[in-house]
Length: 191
Image 1 (cartoon, rainbow, N blue to C red):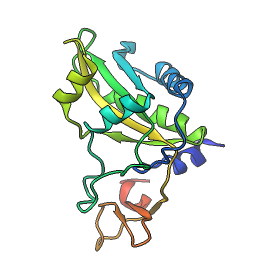
Image 2 (cartoon, rainbow, N blue to C red; image 1 turned 45 degrees about the vertical axis):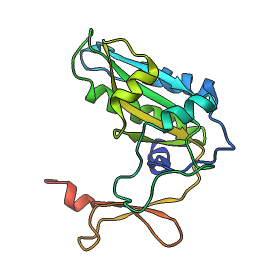
Image 3 (tube, one colour; image 1 turned 90 degrees about the vertical axis):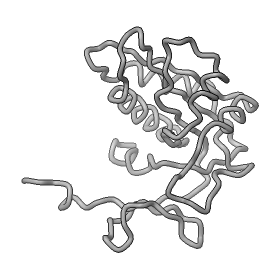
């Protein structure tokens, strides 16, 4: 599979098949990809907390929020919940801000998951203090991003942005998740 194919199948999935557990080895391999990804000034300030145990997944699940635009959807129901998580942590003893490398690492890991037939979603909406307490993190570690993972159990389609519809993703009557994207003509300022 080439990079373009991987990018197209790497959507923000929010419903998963809980019968397909994400293997711990895959999580470790994904962190291996993040480890060799670019890092500003090569400081490598990110750390990773891996979760694949079913009980631990449920505990993390209780602390994350999914799909803010879908006001009438309370998140994945039993049978659709993530079967793994990678929690990206920033080590404040190394540097104070982590957003650039966290984004690079997250996208790289999600592409790796897609290549293996899994998918995920970057989650920035989570109960920060509750999750910190659950993990028992030391003071130097900040939770930057949570990646929810599993075998996708939904269809996500990309469509051109329509000014009448807006940029908000939505689900149609069949449960298909639609993601409006601005056209190249809107994005490229000069060519």
